[in-house]
Length: 275
Image 1 (cartoon, rainbow, N blue to C red):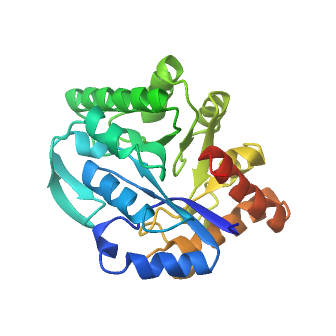
Image 2 (image 1 turned 45 degrees about the horizontal axis):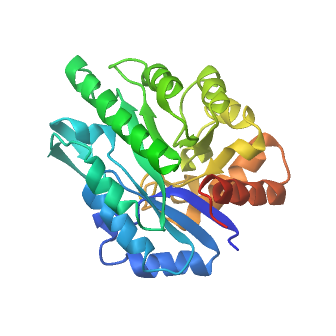
Image 3 (image 1 turned 45 degrees about the vertical axis):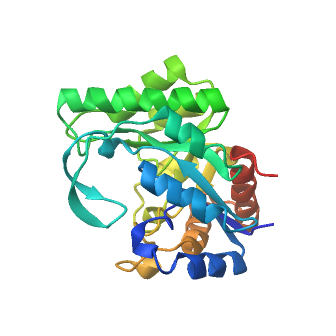
């Protein structure tokens, strides 16, 4: 059984193209399991392919990131560059086919991103594509992996929670949670957990949010290769650094580090229905 579980990482991105297998093997040797998360059909398919290369400890989440639902100059997570993104549609049939793999444990990352998008038509498109992914998650009985980010486009948490209240029948996780305590309360009431990244090692801004949920509704992630923790700031992040996130969560909550570490693993296995 793992000592740590990075519930949201991206070893399926092209920056790791020629290195992912060795890096994942190193993580597994250090007792770190992981869930690679897709942002497009291509990166989702790659996440599934990678997960199927390992007997255990490597899983996949498949979905369409909200920034890829409209065309514009966006930071492309897969390449690590600013590109003109395509106006993509979530193909229920294609993603349903990917979900047939037993290694697919969730749908996402999906949601609303009002940091990059302010145009009302584009925001409407995000909401429509989000709804399709909720429907597929409901159909398959798989949890949702949420990406929600406020910005000049408005309060994405408020809109996303309203959509979830109306339509979801499955639980989920709010990845890289950065909402308010009130947002957290509403998500928790819907059965959604909250996860935190290495950014919590850099600032006290997340302390109140880390303390608020019950321990069984928190998970740890790296969002690698991004948001590296303090010890490697400015360098490439990797799943092994989820250890630092877990340690920081225990420190902020003033709880026993071993109890928190075990709870974070247990939460991930329960959330993803991994025996």
